[in-house]
Image 1 (cartoon, helix red, strand yellow):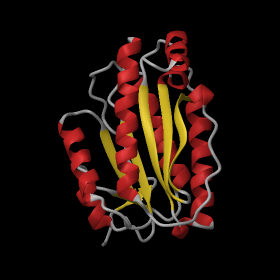
Image 2 (cartoon, rainbow, N blue to C red; image 1 turned 60 degrees about the vertical axis):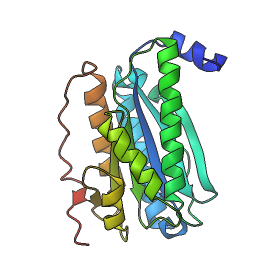
Image 3 (cartoon, rainbow, N blue to C red; image 1 turned 90 degrees about the horizontal axis):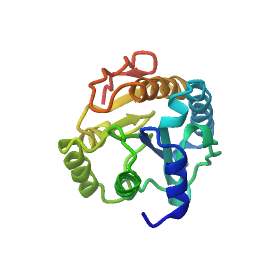
Image 4 (cartoon, rainbow, N blue to C red; image 1 turned 180 degrees about the vertical axis):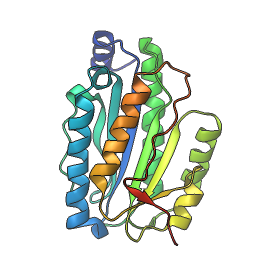
Length: 222
């Protein structure tokens, strides 16, 4: 491991890790009420999961945004006890393909750090939220997602908001993408929090059934 700071963090907290990357659309169409609801959802996620003494030491979150400012790492991997939700703003296009590749690269790097630090980890999650269609090449990124899923290297979820192109999302994700009901970001992130708490309290390799998504998702009609 080449990053001394990460070595120290992993040595200080040797709990098994449950890594999750949030891949968030901050393009111009997310402006106004959607970005406000997304920010509130992140706050609710942090507050809910922090209540769990095991999860706050095991669940690690990273945030990659695509839109305002291009593709940006808004948060490198940190455990929930060190996570402060960023305040996201909207603008720009939707470089989804680039963002997926960046997230997958980050996940690979983090796995290497776990392995070199002797820290066990659960299968990582990537949760992508978008309200539009990619404005860059996304096909190669989709192939990577499918390969990672096939190798059981991660679990990738896609959530569409408002006018999201669900047909493209269904080609990127292996499992069917979900459509958010209105702006129920808080409900979505509470589902994520409770799912991560359930996974982090299990044994590595144990099959953990997904929680129902009825409170925040609906069937897409597009």
